[in-house]
Image 1 (cartoon, rainbow over the protein chains, first blue to last red):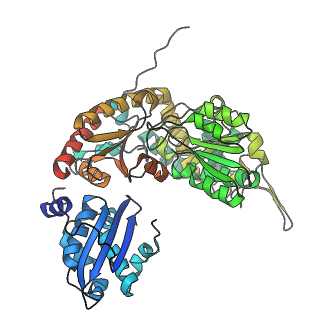
Image 2 (image 1 turned 120 degrees about the vertical axis):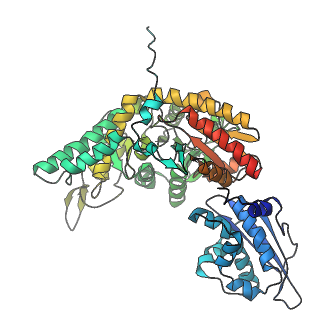
Image 3 (image 1 turned 30 degrees about the vertical axis):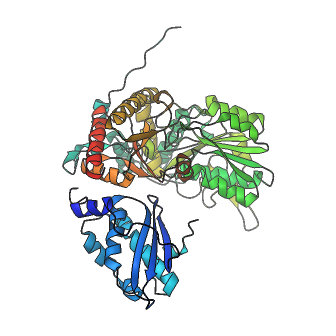
Length: 141
Length: 411
């Protein structure tokens, strides 16, 4: 328990990094976890090369795990390219999150990464692994 | 008239019937506060299942050998138990199904497809579980009928005055007890209103039957669905009661073996009630276990259960109010079953449930298969603690303590 809500998770949950909205973002997507109603929107602004992530923000609501992992994701992807992120294995983020997760909570922890991959897929045509394809088909509003 | 006091329920004593409570969760005794999702099973039911498999199991209705006769007797005995449990006029009106959900689908398809069309209205309440919402929405769309919602007020109680806004109503569908808020709905009034307009009244008693006395004749409904797993019985079996005159006029739902009278290449004719609706090999042992569960619940006394749970709900509301920052939903305790839905300000239900789990307290967090209701409440999800005949007040104390801890960690 104390493992699950360890200090770094609570810190990201209570002080999320990159929380906000980018108006007119180059890439954007939103996703929903139908199990718990968590919603995450992600906004990406590219640098002049059109490939490097210059600025990235997220908004939405959700549990501590989804909020903290998305906040950590924002720090991880800053300055990296769309292609790199498209290829980023989910294990890299889970390692960063660093807590044991049950299958249900895994979905919370990976929601932000899925939404980011969908945003890049839509804007840059980067490949979208099958496991995230469902998020791309989601019609939220 | 003499007033007879109802025998009180001794939850501490009943608890000993449930082997699951012998274990520890995260090193702590299990406080199981999710009985609205599914109930735990007493040894009496587990023994009945085992005994049936060990001594009487065979397929039913087919064999001429003794074992098959014995299995048939047990299976039909469970049907009679179910009849008595809901005070139905005849056992042939009781159909075994896979679940309460399947019972409602049976009505929606077998009655709805032949009796609904453009201009007709299907009215379901805003409180419905998806099981009594989605089938009607789907069948209404298939037949061109209008699908409408009867709204609730801010306490989660039906706004009956809104009924008269609707003309052409052919189906009124409601739950007896809301699985999400615990609201006990005025089915008798709804049924009278429905019948004045020539509509049928369909009741989802999945949440009602385990906790409240159900009398289909007193309720005045036309169909009533309930299930075994929320009622101390095995999962995989449910029941539908329907008025014989309606069931007789309905086309079958599932087709196959056992539900026929005669099969020829040119034409097949249907069997008698209830077999017309029981195609294929049914969950035989589960039905027998369901019968044992109804016997168990009846021996405890459904009215005693309802009274006891109402006390637990009142106690839980009191304890939760003391925690601070807790918002509860639903009606006052006297009009509520043993269900308390709540949110802790600023803390997502998943996190609340996770912290409670570490304390051995099992509650539900989510939309409880009631997304339209969650939207009405203006929340994405809630926490839900729900009680049954084995719930003791100490478990509610542990819930309250767990909430203090959640607030300390995440608040």
